[in-house]
Image (cartoon, rainbow, N blue to C red; front, side, top):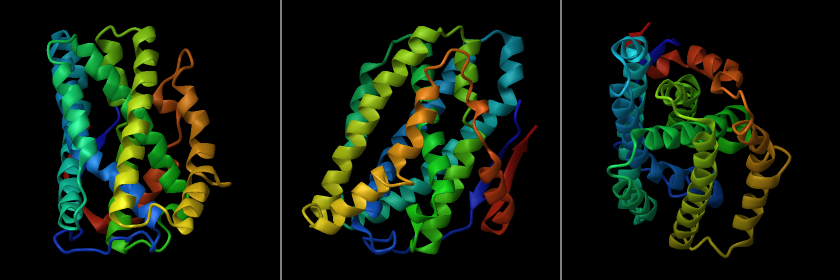
Length: 274
């Protein structure tokens, strides 16, 4: 299976940053802040789901997945730690993390479910994050003027999301997960993910007194619907998930690999799994 490298990012998140850290743009900052606020609880859910899912497999299958799952968990745990540090700075600035509260309630309601459901959700969200990652890596304007250490954090995260995008999907298939539930969970996850993030973005902008500014809405229109906008560039990759025979490995990884090569000085390798 694909080699997954666990890396320790060499940036300082112990010092504060400006509210509009993303090029002075209120919407771009609020949007990425909302995503970050969702990550620690989400990454832990992914770790637990895949770890529990692999335990249900026969011994030979567990052995086949051992290296990939260990690398997946290592990368996700590192993302969780880094974004917890980033979020701590947001909390000092007065932001309230409602997206995490809603996610925890949904996770609590899933106790006792067939573990394939959690892995199917993880595979769906991993596809979401992989296409968002590709958009970040291919759209310089998304982080134009951002504080360099924070731009590095987001692009590093994007590159690693691209690397491990197939792990949960493959575990779900190995568990005997069917196509009907795979695509059904993508529909459900899309509804929750988009709604939760947008609600948190609105809260963030309201906190910054930026929600009703024309410049905020102009930026939102450009980021979401412009010629290189998020929705325009990601709806086809999102739709691909519903195609029979889809596999995450069908999507491009070149830019993620290039970023990791060219920015090797920004991290140290903790572990590499064949």
